[in-house]
Every structure is written in C-alpha cells, then in structure tokens.
Picture 1: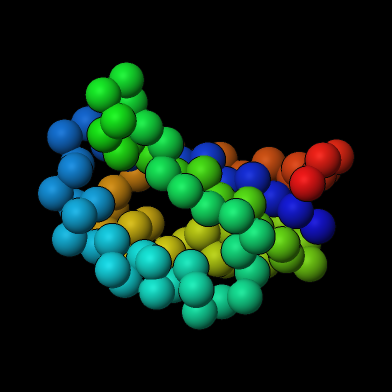
Picture 2: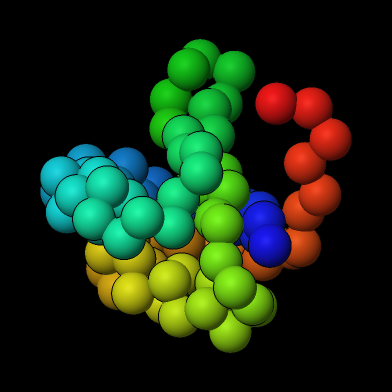
Length: 90
C-alpha cells in the first residue's frame, strides 16, 4: 500500500534540517520503502517540510518508518500526517 507522509517543519528550524539532511537522505535510500520523496517549498523556494510516498505493507510499517527518520528524531517537524494514498497516474 502507498502512504503519503506530509511533514511541516517547525518555524525557524532550517538549521536542524540542514544539519540532518545527509542522514535523512541516506535513510531514504537505505530502506527500499520510499517510492517518491522531496521537500515542500515556500514562495521563495526555501525548504519548509517533506512529502514522502512510502510503499509499505501496512500503516504500522509507515509509522515505524516515519518515527525512525533522522529528521523526526532531530525534532524538525511541527506536524506529520500519514495518509493512505491510491496512485492513479504514474
């Protein structure tokens, strides 16, 4: 099943994002559960969150993945939602 993870950064947390980005990117590549991923951007093009589409067997697996993301462990996110997603195109 596909799960969309939508996370919004805490205000003023760009330094946390930058410091943990290498570990986050390695985590994305290492798990084989990420179908698509990329940052959410503000009007100026600055990173303000994340959109990650996970391909997981169930919602607990998505929650486990999200909890172990280095960004989450570093306290970057103000909010995280996990929503089952049905791919229609692509």
